[in-house]
Length: 289
Ligand code: ASP
Image 1 (cartoon, rainbow, N blue to C red):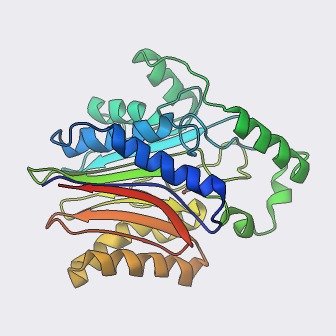
Image 2 (image 1 turned 180 degrees about the vertical axis):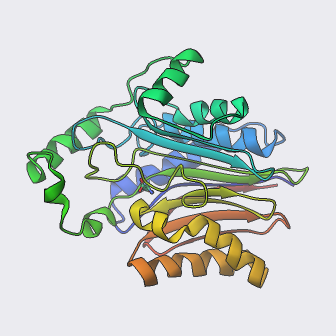
């Protein structure tokens, strides 16, 4: 049996925007015709389809940072402890494919900014526009709140703004042979200072895979980073043996310690699968057959 879980971000508002995200996740799942491929290829494909959908905040359709540029993060990892992350890449619709390429190259674990761009060019990935009209309009709206980019204006707590608007994408899978993988991709959160990196591509924070579990997160990344929430799921799972309990408790941990919002999807080596979120909604779908 192959299990695949996918998310398209968590949110506290059930708006039309959220419904479009839910449809986008289900439509990405619907595009996958072969579930017999290995877990790694499956999570990469699932995330790629979601990145290509302009309604989701990853790849094409990413939120713009406060200087009007789309800098994206993506991470991918496997149960045999392979991992790579691409940080702050621009001009691509599919950062996850670049992360996968870096993982297969098996030397560095993370490349960011200029280096990530060079790696992408060298490997023949096309330079593509990742900015949609909708996100450009949202950016113009942000400019009214932050007419100039100064870090000082960030001194107030941004979480009230961000808990309404999350939208990273992620996937976890276990295949017939028991191999697991996790992948995540994001344009970040609303109101990101240029160059800000969140949890999404960071091993153990927003994405994690070991011989025990595969975990993909969405949520307030600055807070998730401080709790290492994806890795915490593994710790909790190893204690209780109950994956559903582990993801629920990990989401509660973030709320208790950081007043943070998140969504989590996970599978375990004994083929449990679970999702949890402490937001009102999470765009989510799954295949289990
Ligand atoms: N975790 C992402 C970040 O902080 C945002 C999200 O999940 O929507 O960059």
